[in-house]
Image 1 (spheres, rainbow over the protein chains, first blue to last red):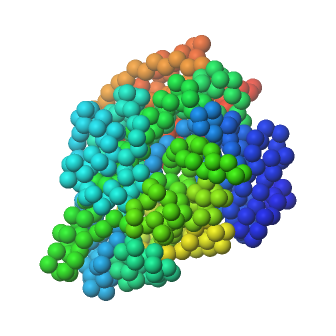
Image 2 (image 1 turned 90 degrees about the vertical axis):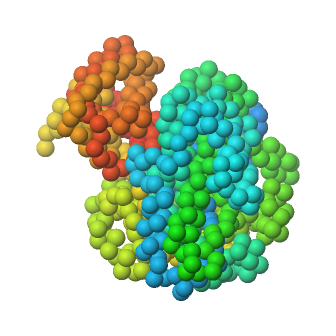
Image 3 (image 1 turned 45 degrees about the horizontal axis):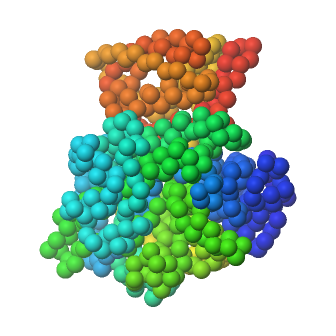
Length: 483
Length: 137
């Protein structure tokens, strides 16, 4: 067990667990949190899981943990770990089952005041066009050959099919397509699960939310993103569905043998890994990229559906109902990137598990309009509370492998949330506060209640206080669609 | 209160679900874990038509057998829309042969993404075997 007395305080927002804490640690753990946020997670296993993560072979720098951390399986949620490429390892569990789970933000010039009486219709139209819930299939059906193209092309496939614009792709991480995806490395089972789920939201904590841009903190950045106070925005949070879940499952299973073959000793079997330059490691990386591209395509099809929903309700009622892409970013991903570590440029595989890439100004992979301000980062709050738009900073590049937080972070178990929150009462409370709710499952809604999460404002205050992100705008929800 | 010889219960986990199952032997443990998983997901089956599936899995250790068995049930649920409520499970030398009876799924309130190996250990004691499984949801 890790306790607060084991931590070295670096600043009000930063703490370290030294490498000496446990004999098998290869690097220290750096935690971005206030003392209050740390105390909240002392009841769960987040920090113990971070220490376990610090035992992976080939790690460089330090394992980084974000203030929205909570207990996961293997890695903590909110964990970032970089392994030297190609000698280090890649760990499927360190990326997660929902590969490229992420958030897309669409902005608009639609003024809330002009459409507030139409929000019920917008919520219903979104619910109609964006299938959600357990076992739901999408409106887009593909055969196996087409699925292979989705795997290889991601959002480029969506562009060819008329679900995307060039601007959408430009404003997506990696242009919505990771190179090196190989469908041959994906099992038949994964393809069976993924074939009819493109354009579906899923269940759990996934959602589509219509927000009001309540306050802008950085005019230059907000202007570059087309975000104006008083206007609407839409967030889409989902990932690679059953396709990604099965790919991770397959490789976690296969790597149980790989750790024996490569003589890797780990404190938790969920951390299983293989060298990046081994056949197993290369195969997983190629399969993971298929799931990443599937998720980019999935969110793109959902964005297209959201645009249809807005058009159906608002055409003829307001002059401009268009939803423009602000950015689409992953928070469960493994990426080969170059970072400066102790003055040396090192190519690494950055595992982000419940952490968002947050590259600072000047990064060449950003579209021209964002190069001066840094990469947009979306931090959704818990249902019914605010969400944030941030940008990456030069400090995030130096101190957190160009990463920051990804959300509010759970603090209450689902079991406890179910016992203390009634779904129908929560729905009524949200609606009484002006938030339209479309939910497939009331018990699922209860599990995602705001009181089950930390205060997202505290999380954002921590990452901005630590300097690994900068505030751009704060959003508040006006309609929520959940599976 | 005396515990039943076989059963399952849910434990607190911040983000996911942790299920404990116990039984006199490994075959019984697999059955209880499957029943627990369906219960956690709120799975309801149609009364008809009844259907059967035979499953064969070979694993390197009891933990892998448990994960692979539950994972197979998730896969069948998602791709064929079927769930099971009657289990004939035999395990010998880490080879599982199961005849499952069930029906099409009528409704399910929760989506289970995967069965994890997190801290998974099948523990033998004088009462039989037990294990705690964490599901990613």
